[in-house]
Image (cartoon, rainbow over all chains, first blue to last red; front, side, top):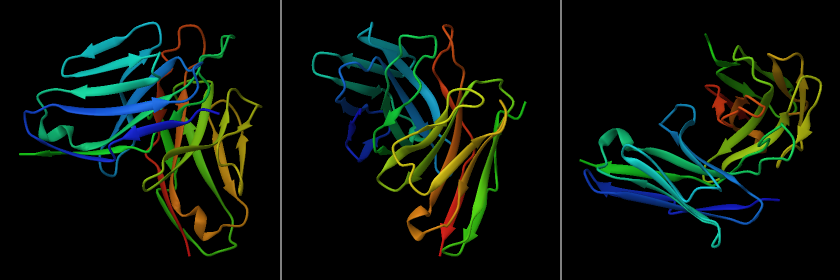
Amino acid sequence: GENVEQHPSTLSVQEGDSAVIKCTYSDSASNYFPWYKQELGKRPQLIIDIRSNVGEKKDQRIAVTLNKTAKHFSLHITETQPEDSAVYFCAASMRAESNFGNEKLTFGTGTRLTIIP
Amino acid sequence: NAGVTQTPKFQVLKTGQSMTLQCAQDMNHNSMYWYRQDPGMGLRLIYYSASEGTTDKGEVPNGYNVSRLNKREFSLRLESAAPSQTSVYFCATRDRGIRSTDTQYFGPGTRLTVL
C-alpha cells in the first residue's frame, strides 16, 4: 500500500517569513495530493490540493508543488501570520479507473507549525 | 445544514466495555470514512464505505466493526474496548463521481479514553 512520509514534524517560523513542509510518497500510481490544516481541538480541513497532471498550484499565500519523478510534494506558506499556527497533514491517493474516484487517503504524520510573533 | 456530526463528543470506557460511535451527514455524499488520530501518527483509516451497503477495511481495522445503516449514517463499534483504542476518532465524508472534487469533510471528532 501507499506510504507517506512528512517532514519536519515541528516547525517554528517568524511571523512574515515563509514555511515549507515536505512529503514523499511511495506508490507511483498515486495521483491526488491534498493538504489539510487542523487547528487545536478542531477537525482537519482541506486547504489546497494538487493532481498529478500539474506541477504547481497556488491559492493566495499558499502553494503546493509536485515532483512526480522524485515522488515528493511540498506545501509553501508565504508571509506567515499567527492564524497559520496549526498542524498540517499531507495525503496521497489514487483515482480509480471507475467513477468511484479516490476512495482512500493515506496521510502523513503531520507537521506542527508555530508562527512566532 | 449540519454537515458531518458525531456523537458522543467525549467518552470514557473501562477495558472490555463496548460502545458505538455514531456519524451522520446531510451532504448527500456516497463515501464515508472512520479514522483514528494518535499523537505523532497522523490520521489512520479504520474502515470506509464507498456506498450504502458496502464497507471495506482500512489500515487499522482490528478491534472495530462498522455498519453503513443508510446513506446518511455510518457507525463504528468497539466490541471489547482496550487501552490501545484510546484515541480521537474522526468520521469523514466525500462526494463520489466524475465531478467530485475528492475533498473529504470531517466531523468534529470523538475523544475516547479506555481505562
